[in-house]
Length: 105
Image (cartoon, rainbow, N blue to C red; front, side, top):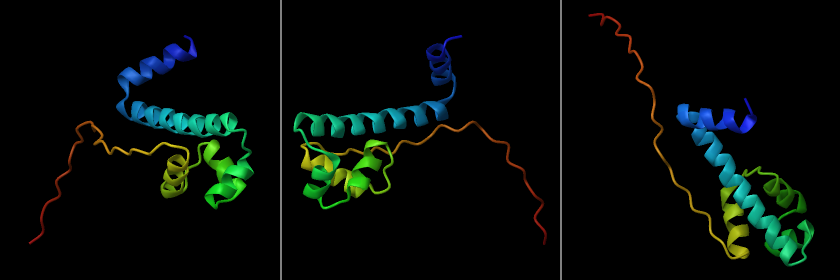
């Protein structure tokens, strides 16, 4: 089985895997947007960092998909003409067996 086929099967069968996969795809889209902006405007990470008042290392981490502070990511995206939209979605859990313990009087 090819990797793509395996991933597609897991996406169909495992809602938790799909949620994690979707999050990774969103992070990739954000990093791609930032890198594309830098390339289009011929900016280094250091130059963009200076404009935003953050370190070059922080820009590097964001471009690698490490988002330790969403406010800074939102500020960066706003600076380049985008905004961050977060959605919280309840996960569907499988029914769990609940063990009832006797109540002691």
